[in-house]
Length: 356
Ligand SMILES: O=C(O)CCC(=O)C(=O)O
Ligand SMILES: [Fe+2]
Image (cartoon, rainbow, N blue to C red; front, side, top):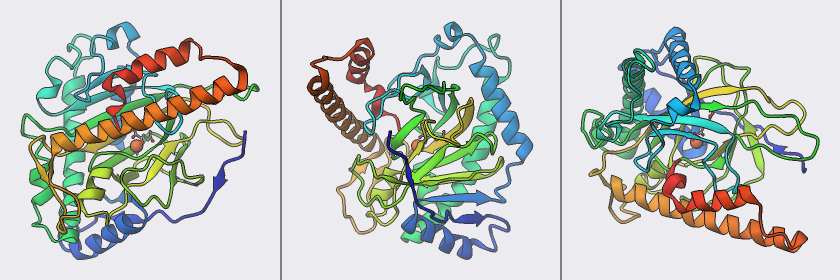
């Protein structure tokens, strides 16, 4: 396998201390990061290391349950629920070797929480943490709105988590340890993708659980290309790393850049092969939010339409990738796919790949 090419690129670090009095400086830093990198870390955000670690313990207690219990809240196209090794992304056409559980604030969660006797206090603890992350997101939303010339509360209203049709989503992630194989098999973690939502706020459990990488230079919303020069993101526990999603890219008339990223499939010297936990909080607008940039570069869509179109783009890109792989396999050996590929094709017929 070809060795990964790396480039050094500074990932801006933005402090939120004294937010009210420093809001102009923070806005400048944030807009600069959004325009030039698409990724930035946030410090002095007000969440303590203890409360982040406590949420990771809560996440670990969820994933430690038997699969048969977690399967009582299976993933569904409202983008909630539990899945295991089922997310296939267009960049590789292979499933990510992970499990995840997605939670929201609104009506999409009806029936999607496990009963309290399975995991006492889980729902309450998770929602409390989610509201705290929403608080940090809202500070960033004020600055992003200012940067685009909208009213301060413009994005906050668009992402109102108290409304039943809220689509904001918190994804707990657990990557399985991967074997060190000598046969060239690559076990994907989160293969290359751009998030299709507004803004992703990401937590990693521990600095040693590395693997997050970004691919600079993405210029358009619709591409599913696989750039080949990556930058490693070095996270410390307690750091928050944020990235612009496709939605904010189009909402800013392509000014802010949604950036490809991945959790590298361990396969090279120095890679981290152990189990890995992370938490991704995807800010997504309410279904009836009307979305259009100040310059009206793209037609107006609602939050619901944007999500549907993003899912469609993803689905088509994935079909192309699977077709390409199938032809490659056939050319190489006259071989028409094995059971895993067959299963993947079935899975991709469902909207499972609509996820970020
Ligand atoms: O686990 C991570 O660090 C990144 C996850 C991610 O990019 C995603 O779920 O969209
Ligand atoms: Fe992502």
